[in-house]
Length: 405
Image 1 (tube, one colour):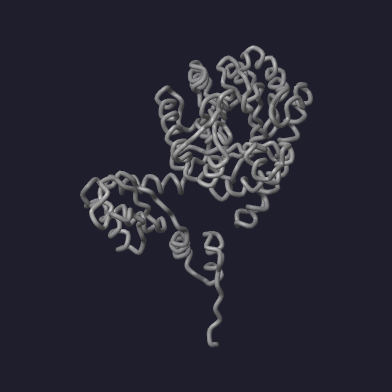
Image 2 (cartoon, helix red, strand yellow; image 1 turned 135 degrees about the vertical axis):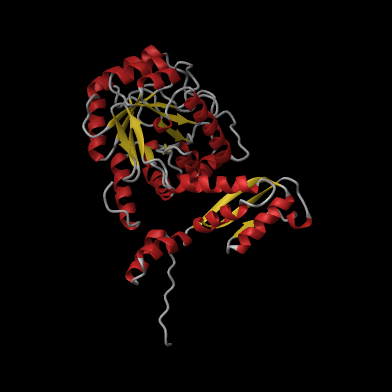
């Protein structure tokens, strides 16, 4: 045969860019062509049949496609969704072409551009008291430090403040950029702890970890009294599993202290959250809730650059919900905030793998870590810092992003 052919199975932008560089392609051309190698899917709902048909034709005219309801071609239904399937560059062209179209499609085009921008340029930092948390180097690890007698995974192991401080220092050495200290168990069925007792548990640990080299301190609490004292003792992040809805005073503490906040979704409370939770579309419903919650916090005085969102894996979710949320975790980037995922040792991993003991779920959890890295998740909350840091290093090397975490 005259020519030598080779099928390139990977269409990742980094892999393709390497091929094109070796072929001597102009750098500007590499940028254009690698964008075309990455498929983007955009869903648009509330369409009349006429609007859906226009979208279909406009997408076909630029070399993309639109999946529409099978009855659209016959004039129905009056309210449907379409999935626009293309690359980012063609979707930008589509947005421009929609500007002159009827049925509000010009406004939809503007929203396409906005969503593509948030997807391609997620927040680069989180503002903290006296500094910031840099997110540009890849995912950060938040190490879990439970100082409780009854947490599902490591309850009782770090109740002693000195042992807890040693654990915090070890996690920082292993690669944790954030240490998340919690004094109240949030395992399914756990009852609420009085803030005074919670503070008795966490305050000595906060005092011993203050100034810990190389790590930011986070306080895992839903009580404003605990958060206020924790920030005074050096915590820079308030990680509230209730999304700052449990304690009316939490928003005031956060806005007044300049601490960053993690806004997590949870259906119910730890005591009730697994009492038959259900969703029609878990990722969509959670995203809508997070959007509403963060809008409220911004209105109440918390700066956008201090907000992190968390879908709340295992908090009022079924197995199928957790799996779908992780598969679609990248969708949360369109909210415009850094995304945190806390999947470590969760029961859904045990259900899938048959591992009853939480400490045996590290391997299964690394599969979730890989999916989160593919989705561009910025913060991973984990128990197993060393293993996660190693995984990130290898993943980065494979994906052409360098070998360090």
